Length: 321
Image 1 (tube, one colour):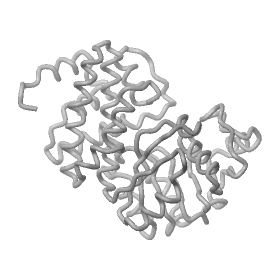
Image 2 (spheres, one colour):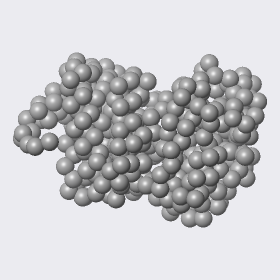
Image 3 (tube, rainbow, N blue to C red):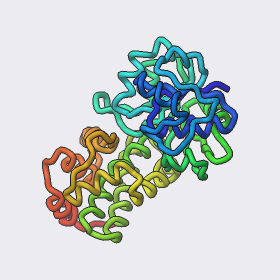
Image 4 (cartoon, rainbow, N blue to C red):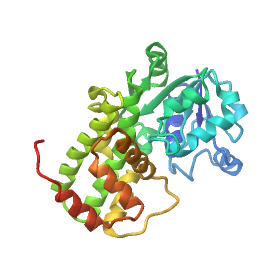
């Protein structure tokens, strides 16, 4: 089976490696011709995933046309780039199975990846791959479990079977809304968890924040049509636990820098920053109480200090759990 991975960041490269090791013929696209040439020359993506060799069955190119015939296209790019990318390239991709690997909510439209795929490329099968994972773990063949969400369950089963490997186990759901929102919202809570640890407020405070943050995730997701059991699965709770407890998480590291008053590399994509802003708009629209998400959005925009955010959250009225 031919699989194209559009986006040669760490996660896209890791997927290329594990799928190729499982016998798939993989095309890996990068928008930068120099990056493509370097990967072909070095046999690795030293810019994004150093120390991991690319199997010979991974072809690298900066030309979309080289891989557009592949029936399965994994869209491994940041959420805020997805709509523009599909608008530019849908003529070559429409009719294929398009599997988004982004976690977030589009700032311009308030939509998740499968809704954007359905609108932009209406003849394609829209799906999303999400869940608790770090690129390095996948690339090294460490056991990892993800959620594959597709509204067409029969087509989702085909994708599940095709993209699973001995070390990458995919669980299937038709609840695309729940899977997408779990992956998006946990990034916001991970930023808050990073702030807590960066500000040296302690592990007990982090545990409390994760728990109340998970309640916020459920409130908004269920209001938008998600199933509670999806949020309790890999794409929700599983991903929340991982990203709130590890410095490998970019969102957690970003929050940690905020809490500690340190600078953060502006070149690192932090999906939770844009998602916090999009979530705040959605929560206000649907009248959903999400104090942690609102505080993260305000922190990201430098409208409040960490001390102000903590004081405001701790001063909220006591209530039943």
